[in-house]
Amino acid sequence: MRRSFLTLLFAASAIAPNLACAQQGFHRGPFGLLSARDTSDTTVRPEVKLDSITVDLSAVHILHFKGRADSLSWERARSAAESADGYRLVVSLQDRRIWVMADQDTILTAPVAVAKGTTLEYQGRSWKFETPRGRRTVRMKEADPIWIPPDWLYAEVAVEHSLKLGRIPDRGVKLSDGRTLKVQDGEVGVFSADSGFTPLLLDEHIVFDSTLYIPPQGTKNRRVNGALGKFRLDLGEGYLLHGTPYKDSIGLAATHGCIRLRDEDISWLYDHVPVGTHVYIY
Image 1: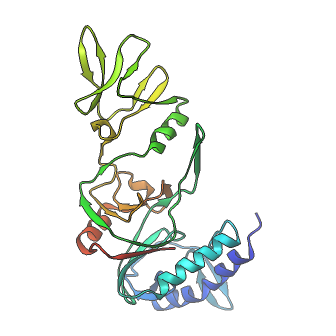
Image 2: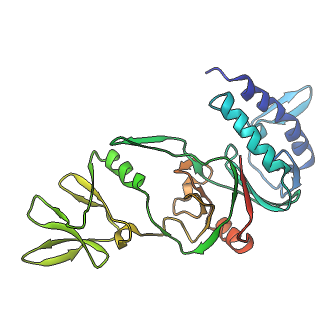
């Protein structure tokens, strides 16, 4: 695979600061800044020698871009994050990492999961799963958050299981077995003349007659407990910093746009990051 000039350029420029890190026992910050950290790490890393200088190859980070416009967008967002001051959060999508900064000091750094960068197309609709670069602001914080799944979740499940996708109108849906799928007292259930209304399980998808039905907004079936972990910080437009039950996803490009953190890290952010804090994503 041919690498772009910019990719190779950024890879080469990453070597110098990381040489200093390796020699002095420091770790690289969000912009190549050095900060003291515990270096009691016994992991064996690949190395290469350049004129008697040993380079830790795991510290050389190669950046990947879709093209010139993408690389320029990254550079603008990174420059804005680097020139900012005060108390702020910085997220590197390439590094899949977050830093809590106070001016030039790093208070906390942690791995994160970011958007997977894929596109879902279904029934004439399209969803692109990206974490957008730029500056955002923590608008609100919430403990034990409830997730209200967007329509793309149901489209994704329908595609995965080769199902049709349907909605439940106020009058209900007549099923092939004669029952009616409807909403009553905020819950989706089935109604029959013999047994009356029977609510469906809240933690299961609603599938009848090879059709996945999207629970109406405001119903209990559209509320999911635990999917966002113990805490969330709302960045607006549906983008969140939040916990996750999917621990293995941390450090990967695995989300639909939000930034996932480990339990202990999102708990720290919830306790120490006030509403109004700027978040720089690059």
